[in-house]
Image 1 (cartoon, rainbow, N blue to C red):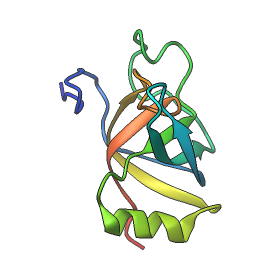
Image 2 (tube, rainbow, N blue to C red):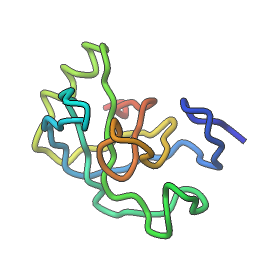
Image 3 (cartoon, rainbow, N blue to C red):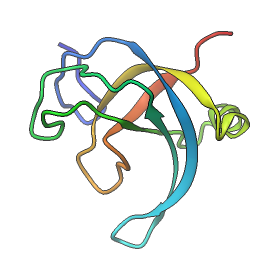
Image 4 (cartoon, rainbow, N blue to C red):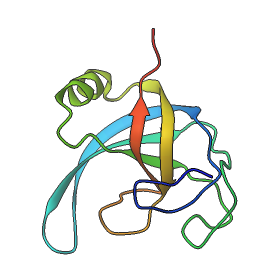
Length: 113
């Protein structure tokens, strides 16, 4: 079974989601500002078994982590406010204050056009 970047095990396989992309800044409880790209899924669905982080409801909002990837940031900036598709290579349900939304996605890509 694959592990997430935080070492959590899940039975997730690569999947695509579509929804509206937005950007906002969110303040972590320690005062640090987080730049958030988030997609709200048009059709939420379960990807893996429920656990203490995911619960019984499927994730609706996905925090797309960009970090220092200028190409991904530029691509998302051009798509803000639109309905887009994103391929989730790996994700897990939010577990801490750095994760904004229902799920956080460190490994993702835009589908080829």
